[in-house]
Structures are given as C-alpha cells and as structure tokens.
Image (cartoon, rainbow, N blue to C red; front, side, top):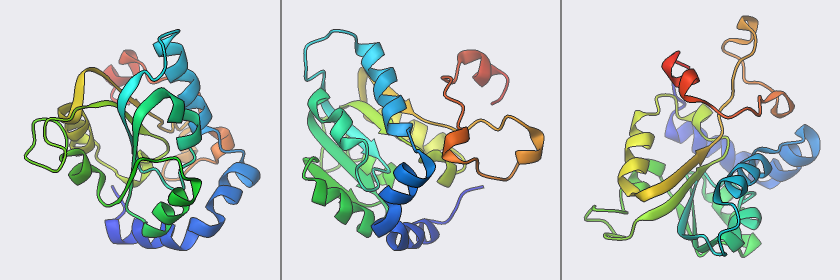
Length: 189
C-alpha cells in the first residue's frame, strides 16, 4: 500500500527543518552515498559531466545534489513537499526544483506533450522514495518513458531480512546494501 500524497506532503513539510540532522547525524543515513558509489562504478572513467539531465525523484532537502552535481549538466529535483524543496533550494545546487508529483513531473519529459517535450533524461535517481509510493508500476513506466535509450534508473529499496519485521520500516543503519538483482526480481521481490 502507499501513503496518500497529502499525508506524505504534510509529513515532510513538518519534518523538513530537522530532516538532515535526524537522518544523517542520528541514523547514519547513507543512501545518497551508496547510490553515488554504484553510479560512479557504473560510469567508470567517462569524462564529466556524464549526464545531460539527471532527475532526482523525491529529492527532499537535496542530500543527493552535492554528490551528483559534477556528473550532470542539468540537475532537476522533484518533491511533493514544498518545505523540502525550500531546503533543497538553500543548497544552491539544483538547476530546477519542482514541488509536485513524481509521475506527473517525469511525464513532462521524452515524447510527451509536456513542458520538456523532446528532452530525455539521462538518469533518474530515487533515494529512499519507494517506501512511500507502494505500487511502483507508474513510476517505473514514467521513468522508462522519460529516459534516453541507455539511460540509468538508480534507486534504493529496503529488504526485510526477517519475517517479524514485515510491516515495519527498517532503521537506516539496517538497510541491506546489496544491489537488487534479476534473480531477486524473478523471485517476486
């Protein structure tokens, strides 16, 4: 199941001011660093910037921005929470920040009739976002439609290691760092 957009917006509007301290300092949150490490290994020694457009889905306060800024010509961040967007704006790193729905924002790119018609995204990045979305078909469809051929969809997910944790969100320090594999997908994970 997914949380309603109104609930997520309200939750993160209230949480924005203390978000970075709570996640980074208190919970040792490392999703942005883990994604950066994987993407860096994937692109290898290609000259920077590697990407034309990098779309930071659910950008929050912009924790991924500093890590990926030098890898892209255009850094776009999208989040439901206006307060999170305000905090991301304070970083001065993003070329465009949008308060809005991820699927609707992705649908503005590619072959759409939207604001960015004809502009394809080189990389969609989603750090610790999917736990709030629930069913992922729409976000995957929108990402696939907006990505340039050969583009990258990099994201984090949480894997429950024990059945008794079902229905409970793990602590950031308990996140399994192993990439999701084709085998995981085929097992219905």
